[in-house]
Image (cartoon, rainbow, N blue to C red; front, side, top):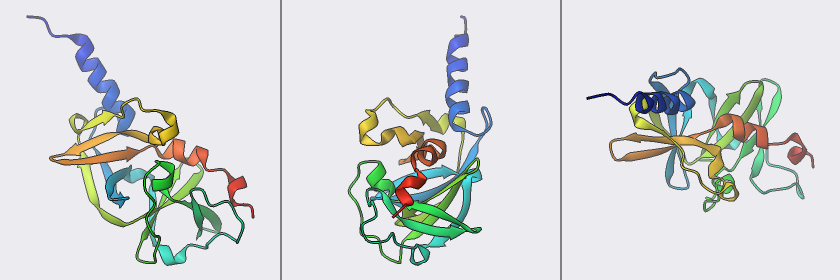
Length: 172
């Protein structure tokens, strides 16, 4: 009986693409958006803030997914509606929402969340690459899927999301 060397190699590639260290467990901050649970790698989480700290855009500013900005270390960090970016139903944004400030390299973005749920550790066996889905529906912002028992988490690709949020959208 021979082991399939390609099977273990594929598993390692899948886990390495999602986890920050190849074949290692990773911690994720879990939050709810549009009634669904999403996770961001804990090493990308800069801080949590209250939604009432968000500076709303001026009248006439583009409102597609941009909710406003939040001041972080002297910078105006864009706060986005992730539900809109993913093509989901938009929620009412009230002051009881939370803002998750995320960093990817030199870029920072923030997302409005219904609530922050917890921090979970996902082992490589609990993570899968996101299935190929049309780019138009926003699912390309998901790096993968995490499973903890019956819970399914969309694992956010902070780098792609940050790259698509342009400073020109903030100009009013």
